[in-house]
Every structure is written in structure tokens, then in C-alpha cells.
Image (tube, rainbow, N blue to C red; front, side, top):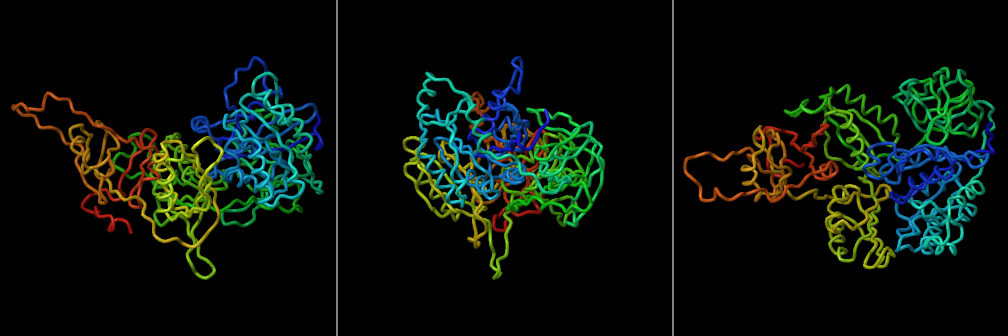
Length: 624
């Protein structure tokens, strides 16, 4: 079928995390006839990474398409977590409209505001989809009003503020434009489909605008890789067309930021048909396509047909707010559980990630075997670390540090964030004290958030460094019932010193395997991180000390055998409990003088200085 711009629609789906984007795409694909009836499908078919399936969140922006009659709809599924905002920002130029998903109970949350602001600033036409209307605590009308207030607050134009409203239940695969039909759809007396949403997309989302230039213009917004044809550049063709074997020009930049032009032959062209990339001989203006033929193509490059054509403005994303040191693994157990990589290989792996993710940056440090990665948040770092360890790498990472700025008058500025908390009534006092102790300012208190009886919504303006390590503490205080969302506000005056953690570490003073007898004698000293039979070395952290200072201990101590029978020998004594530390918990917990040692099999904590006679155990001497 020959596509013309009028028979194309390019739309993205944006929302806060866990509001149902990927589930909605599932049913759009199914009901558009993308799959054969005999195909066995898993849930969330758009989640391509193992980490996405395990965590239930979207990490990478992904493309697909559906056909409705003679019209092809290109759909981009975007992440909902603030740490992956770079994925959202760079695909906005590929689309002409957006579906804004909002939970019928939770309403607009911080990331909803972030992604909507990006969409409105690009001039996109937005369709509001109220999802999860089947929730027992749904408050549909109130959420629509909140959404309209948000549109007005973000400066939407009159045309954008006159948005269509679709009421949907993505997991059951139906929607309606009339709220009066909801009772019948909810009780099953009336059957529904997603056809109203398809019709609304065709009606409200405009066809792609074509540039006046007759030559090819394509802005690379995403990258992929194919074992047979190499690196793939993904983007929307803004003007002109491109054919297989055509010679075109890549307008990019060098590492120093200088313009660089490179001509190459197009070896393969692909377009999206459902979840598949289908090979074609020509891509026309308005479509989203994939181009192979250049191994150096990067996000933000412009592909043009003639030397006289200027490059399009490069994709700009908000600057990073956190930095983390990645280092070669120097522990005594290096190379035992994975590949003990050299600094060159670590640097190449980080550069590869930086090229594919415009929200990440890398800086060299004074140490040859250490590199500083700059990003948005702890979760973004945790995902990168988890990806690298699953690839077989061994390395170390340090504590995340905030990136400061200097104001016009020389004052020190730090990133500020807005934390939106939805929590049970019983935890309000403890949570408020916890956030205020971290320099948080309570800006909003909503005693009836509408998310069920006895729940409260709080909003704090708090420094980014005040949020480090707060997520796990918050979940503990709220007994796992609290919702935690953040949004970057910008930079503000420095708020003064903050204490990270008030406890020290229990540190092994020798190399060996932990013994239950030795660990039993340490239980009164604090909280242990693992049980018996675990290899340890001098300087490795085995637990959290109950006091402020560090404590060097012997977890390998064995019970001496004698011919005298002990009175307590008949009693079986076991460890009362061990705190298993996940990667995110380790990132939140460590101090400036500590490393996280990451291997494919283990995550360990250690001191930067291993020898106990070379480091102090006093907090004020080791933390400067």
C-alpha cells in the first residue's frame, strides 16, 4: 500500500509510571488485527527488556504501528518514570499528537505534569484518556477537572485545552467517549472495544506536516542494532524521501562538539508493521523509519540528501542532576565471578550507553580507572548497573553525588525537586518529620485525596540530595502502602548540611568465609547483611553498626573444640535475621568512603581503603 502523509498518524503515549501505557498498546495491537488468531501472546508485548518485565515499568521508548482502514498509525510507547525523562524528550519530535493516560483514582501526578509540559511545548494535540475506570476508588469527574486545571496551568493553547476525553479500561480492552455508558460497560451488560479511541486518533491527531525542502531531512531520535546490517538510526522523515542504496549525508558532531559531515550509502531501509521491522525500498516524508549504512550515527544527527541542506537543531534534554563514579574492580575477589574488565573496556561500555541515552553523560576523572557518569536519578543508575552486570561485567560504583551550580552572584545552587506522597493517615506525622529533617518544605496537604478512605496527599519541595536514601525509609514508615513520585523543579539556593546516615559499618578485619558462630557474636552490634558461608575479605562491609562509628570485626571466628562439654551445647542457636541488601538499597545506604562491588553473581559493600590500619573508624574523620 502506498502511503501518503494524509494516510499517516504519528502518536505517542505518555503518562505517569504504572498508569497503563504498555497494557493499552497491547490491546491496540490486538484489536487492530496486528497478530494472527493462532499467535500466543504474552502480556505487555512492548516490554522488550528483561528488566522491564521484572519491574513492570517502561525504560526505553519503543516504536510500533497499527493499521486502521487505509491509515497507518505509528505509536511510540514512552517511559513514565522521571529518571527516564530523556527517553520522553527525544521522541517528541517524531510525533504530531499524544495520548495522555491518567489513572482514574490517582489523577495527574508529577510525571504526568512533566511529560504533558513537553508535549504542549512542542505544539502537540493531546487526547486525554482516563484509564482504570474499573477501580473501586475511581473519581472520574474529579480527575478530568484536575487534568483541565493542569492544561491551563501549563499554558496550553485554546485548541490544546479543548481536548477530547476517552474513558478506558485498558486491561479489559474497551473505552467510550460517553461517561454515561460506564455503568453498563463496568457491570458487563454492554460490550465495548477500543474502536472509539482509534476513531478519535484519526479525527483529532493531524497528519504529519511535511517540510518545504524537497530533499531528505531526517532527525535521528533513537538507535538500534542488527547483527546483519549493524547500527540502525530511527527517526521521522520530515521532508523528502530516501531510497535503498541512495547516497546521503550525516550531519553530526565530534566528541569536542564540532560539526562533522559524513556521506554514506543506505544499505537497508525498514518501516514498522506491528512489532516487526519490515524491509522496504523507499521511505516517504511523514513516516517513522529505520536506516542502516552508517556505524557512527548518533542520536541528534540529521540525515540529508544534499550538502547545501543545514542540520536540524539537535535534540536537547534537561541536564543531569546526579553523578556517580564507575571504577574498575580492585577487590581481592576480582575476577572470581565475572569478567574483571580493564579501564578501556569499562570506558567503551559507558560511552556506548551515553551515545544511546541522551540523558546520560560521561566525564573523565583524575584516576585512569575511574569514570564519572552523570544522570537523572538513582533508578536510572541502578538500571544501567543491572544491565552491565547481566552482561558479565565486574566493576565498582560510588555514592551518588549532587551536581551543584554557581549563581550569578557567586552563590551555591543545588537541584530542587517536588516530592508528591500519597500515604495512609497513620504515617503522616512520621513522614512529615522525616522529610522536614532532610530540609523538605511542606507546600500542600490534601486530607482527602480520593484514593480510598484514610489516605492523605502531601507535597514537599526538597533538595535532590535530601531524597537520596529516602525511598526505602518512606516505604518502611508507610508499611509499603505509600506512593512516592518526584519532579525536578530546577536549581535553588543551597540548603545547608544534611546528615546521610547516622550509623557506621561492621567491617570484616580478615579474609575467609563467614561462620555462624562468629556472626552470632556480632548480632548485638548491629544488623548483618548476610549469613554463614559467604566469602569476605579485609575491608568488606558485612553489616550496619548500631552506633555512629565503624567497627572492625571477625565474622570468620570458629568455636574452639575441647574435650569439655559446654552446658549450652545441646541448644540450637541460629541467627535471628539478616537484611538482604538490593542494588537500590546499597546505592541509598553507602557513604562517600565506600564502594559497591558489582559482579554478575553478587553485590558487595566495601571500604575504599581496605587495610584497617590505614583508615579511621570515626565518622567525622572519614566523612569530610
